[in-house]
Image (cartoon, rainbow, N blue to C red; front, top):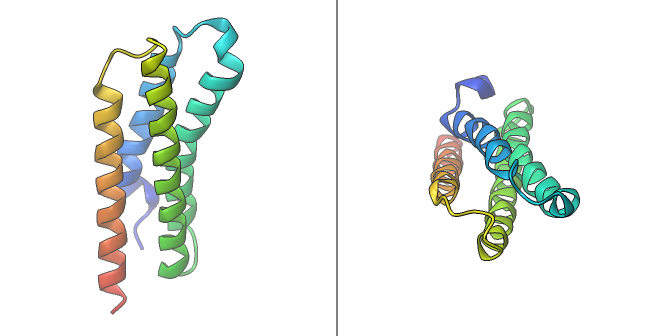
Length: 117
């Protein structure tokens, strides 16, 4: 198994964490505790689940953690939709990055499932 740092899905998710921190820095202070904290935690969770899964002993466990990462992608997406509706986010780049992450994770899951046949 590759090191998680070699995986495109992890690289993209790690890059998104930095981007999320930059983009959420301008949110109102009263929204930092709930919304910003949750957005940042979701973004970190994606990269963390990919890394943790890659460090597991089996492909089955790795795939399970990739599904956890997909759940965090969906969680991040809805939080960004809320932020967009509150006019905190006007940059669509985060939504594009999320879709790229989703596709990379799904591709990695497909690859691992085929490899195990």
